[in-house]
Length: 121
Image 1: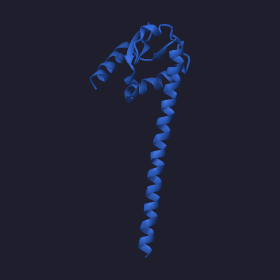
Image 2 (image 1 turned 90 degrees about the horizontal axis):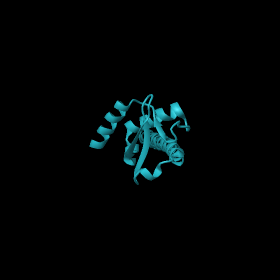
Image 3 (image 1 turned 45 degrees about the vertical axis):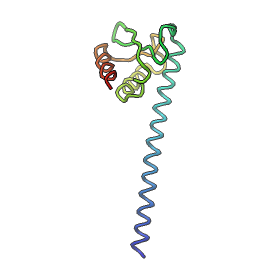
Image 4 (image 1 turned 180 degrees about the vertical axis):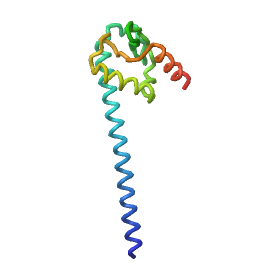
């Protein structure tokens, strides 16, 4: 009887821990999604050349000194490597992007390498 109640309490603790872990991941995912949504909403509202961006795509500015404009598919935003760039953009610029659109703080070569990898997957 004692081993059964001990076993049940361990199962309850394990199920509680598993549920808590899942909720933590969901909460973190929602926080990242909200941050990305806020960046995009603000950058898209400030975008002057939205006519030139096809549906399902987003204009971003990349480069260290001279910013170059790239149009990327929205599907890239779900990729963890691209989300890392978005986090860096948020840390560096907050919600004020100097080009009026979403500015990615990396070199053009790095961005081209990343987007070429993303286009394969």
